[in-house]
Amino acid sequence: MSRRYCGRDFSEAELMQIRRLITENPQSSRAALSRMSCRALQWYKADGGLKEMSARVAMLRMQTDGLIELPPPRGKRPDPGVHLSSRTDPGAAIHQSAGALAPLVVVSQINSPPISQDISERIGAEFPH
Image 1: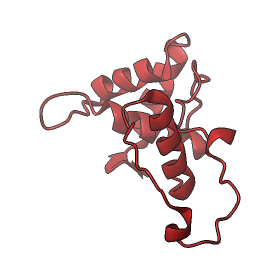
Image 2: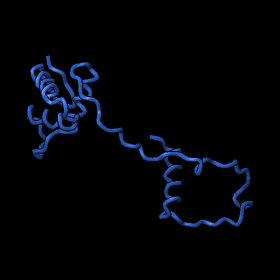
Image 3: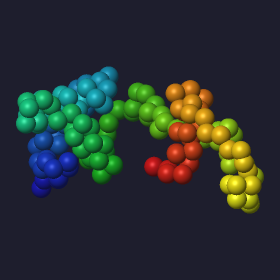
Image 4: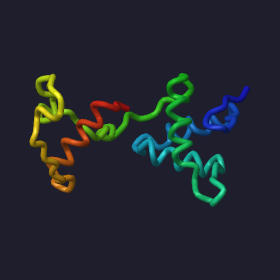
């Protein structure tokens, strides 16, 4: 019986091959194991490169399904990017027309790192991933 992951059917023999690679290379990283698996299974992209990312995703899903056991990840997951801080907390609500707030001045400081960070935080707060 084969299992399908990332657009590829894996036979029981191929799953055994992946398990053997993991067992025989206990110090290897998940990335290295995915490259070894691609080579062993001849899993290549159209340009001849290894289907490395597909192999990583497939192996993670195989682990989730209880078919293999990967070594623990070596590093932390990448930082998602924008972090909200008190600098961009909304202030008190304004209940006046723009005309009542005159004079309004628009100052473009988009290239200033603190201003850029504020804008990124506000966009992140309004449009979370």
